Length: 129
Image 1 (cartoon, rainbow, N blue to C red):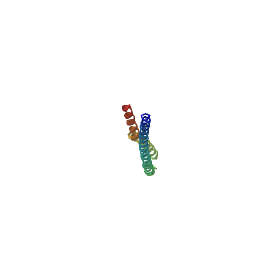
Image 2: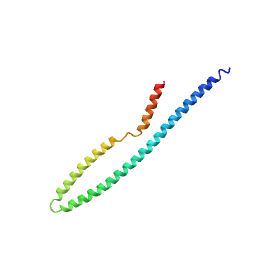
Image 3: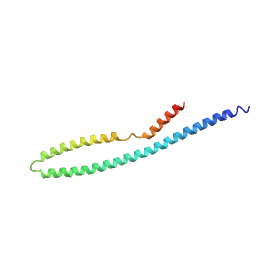
Image 4: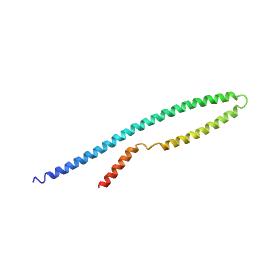
């Protein structure tokens, strides 16, 4: 009779250690996820601040440069200056949009480290089976 009691304890111990290992792995992944989430939030806020500063200063410079040019050519060629400025600003807008799309394409994928670790976990589990 005593030979029958250690077997369930061995299975329960095995299941308990498996559960603890699984929970530890999930905890590690969640901690990594929260760290990456904080990094993404910081990067997003930082990007927003830089974009806001650039837009504000750029708009101020464009406004005053345009007003100065129109004032200088008010008598002789104000329509030509206004048309030229419109074409210039439209071209600059296209260049900025293209550059920003390239910038976004170069950014790392969000939560790449978490996804990589989960993929490694899956590979590890498959090879143990």
